[in-house]
Amino acid sequence: QVQLVESGGGLVQPGGSLTLSCAASGRIFSVYTMGWYRQAPGKQRELVATITSGGVTNYADSVKGRFTISRDNAKNTVYLQMNSLKPEDTAIYYCNADLTYHTGIRYSRDNDHWGQGTQVTVSS
Image (tube, rainbow, N blue to C red; front, side, top):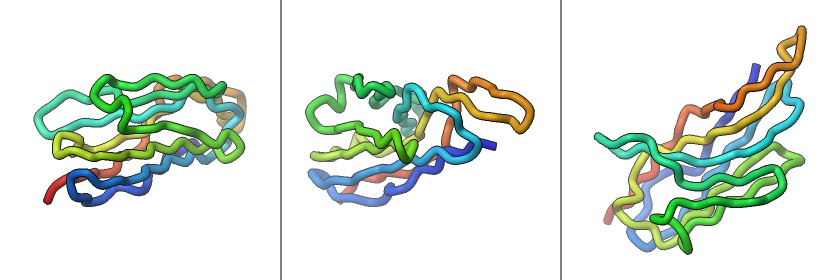
């Protein structure tokens, strides 16, 4: 009923840039906080950045000054601009959203909805 579809991942050299996108689709009524998380091999999933519907942002210390999160509320889409990429940024990046949607019968709140992930590899 609701999907978060990420795009924009790929292979990039150290120091390069990538922009990830995540679009929410389906019977969406409202989208609140959206965010990006990542999981490297053998590690736990970790926060990268979040943004509220009002535009308030929060970043992990490891990406501050290099990554920028933004969103287009009209398109229910969140972006992650990643600059000065490092090998340690290599991970699967997941989109997350807190949203309300219609099931066909009633409205329902899902405050932890995930996308399928997109691979980002930083390597020379």
